[in-house]
Image 1 (tube, rainbow, N blue to C red):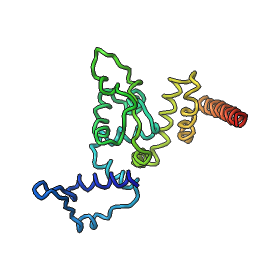
Image 2 (tube, helix red, strand yellow):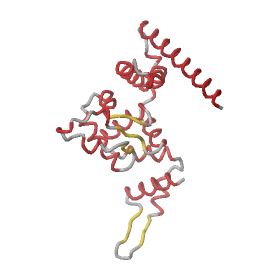
Image 3 (cartoon, rainbow, N blue to C red):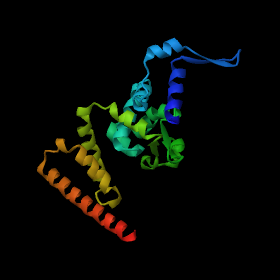
Length: 212
């Protein structure tokens, strides 16, 4: 696995277990210390270890982003973390520099230039690998996940309730946070959205079958 190999080498470099000797033009590894570390051969475990080496604020932003999904925008992440888009972007920067997340466009470079008035909704990122997202998500305590997904679902519903393109995202987060929904009106809303999504999925399958 090339991704695992690259991340493993980076981890060894970060912990000074692998060094390049400029004078001898060669690499040296502290094999005994590497063995003593008991590194996992599981890429998610390795990524968790790497992410935990980042600053707490960067870790927090990455975990919140992971709850959104593989792709996320600065506006939604800002709403979830209750921090300004500028602050969130600063927190994400180390993850961006280290290659854990990648920009979907160049807006992130220009966002802090006031004259350009770029909307944070247009500053879009994605996780560089699904294992990075998975590792980030696993750092969220399990008991906190339903509350977080419900919060995301509500934010998405308020913003995109009339936008069919976001229907499945809204339903998915609502279902993951369903255990926290107690209001009768909101329960009915979730039922209605779920039914609507089910009908749309059925229609899409029917169209797909007809095309085949």
